[in-house]
Image 1 (spheres, rainbow, N blue to C red):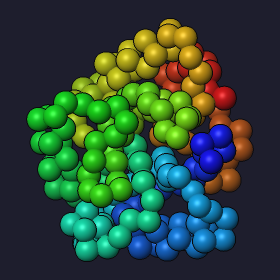
Image 2 (cartoon, rainbow, N blue to C red):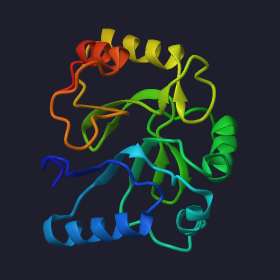
Image 3 (cartoon, helix red, strand yellow):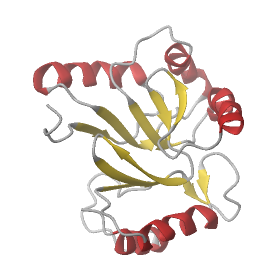
Length: 190
């Protein structure tokens, strides 16, 4: 039914452990689904290059991805090798705010953007803060300015995906990232 609210799963750090992630997603989907998409807001890639094989099985199509999966944590080991083909394809076809396809059902939300996913307006700021903003895994002034421009447009933002988030056990984070705090005030996500 097209009038039903979208059903979206959200997760934090994946750290390249796609087997565990998609096993859990399949279990939740079977018990409480179907879900329309999975949004990953933490570090998507592993911390060590030897943990990359599991991820490559999915990217190369040897393992099935149960539902459309979007990620913003484009840092960790092996990022360049995994995202190289997607980056080249993106350069040829033009940037897509709704995600750059990495493989079947995995989409890289690069830099910053705003798009509609199953009727939800989603804004995102991918990666970590950097003065350059041109490398994979970081955002820069251009990404922040683009989001500020979206904030000036009319329209609702349902979700704002960003990283970093508070570490486990921290309920009242003092300090934080001032730029992200400002963007939250400007975008006013629901």
